[in-house]
Length: 250
Image 1 (cartoon, rainbow, N blue to C red):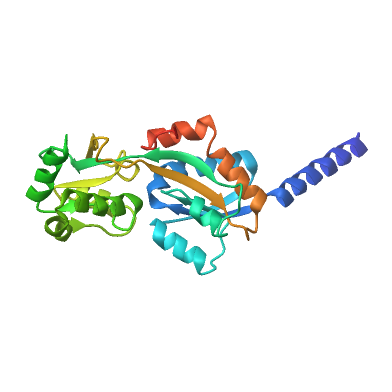
Image 2: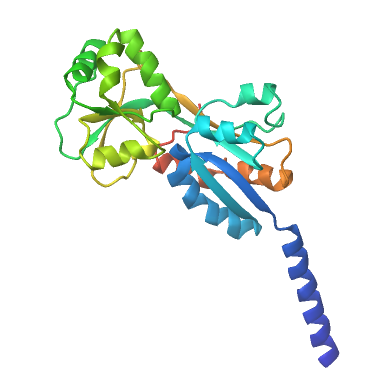
């Protein structure tokens, strides 16, 4: 009996050591717009795989700059299509993973007057009448807003009114009632106390931004990195992304 017990302990110890040996530490650079969903999903992934995820969040241009500078990472998740980065050899071919998409719309401080944006003329009027507006700045939706202002012919009048900052700044500006409204993607302002989402811009004024991820061709843990991206496309993950403002990819 004692020999059987010792054998069972030995087998159990071997199993534990095998699991530990297979567990990986994955370093992920993630767009701040995906932070609410990512931080909820990572513990589930870690429990199911034994891997550990170290996530660093920021605006896409800053993350790409860090990657270009040679900072080590395994996974890169951005709020735009990473295909050009794959073609440039900055991300591994065959690893492009679409996580979802979001459009650009209007959010206001809770209870604030609601700007009109049902068509181009209404949106122009609201932007011109506002004292301050928030955008994601160097984020994907913020860059799109600048092109939209040019299209509307009001860039010179509206750009000085824009407030932005680091990832998550727009939500803080709204909650602090420092701006009249924000023109932004939905994820950064979803479920934020003091912030009310009014809806997406009309189709002819909107831009749907894909959230995509890929693996570093020099990743220390390429297999685990692929496992993470695969997990982020499961029905469980899609449900969480949707609850945080990211629509399923069409």
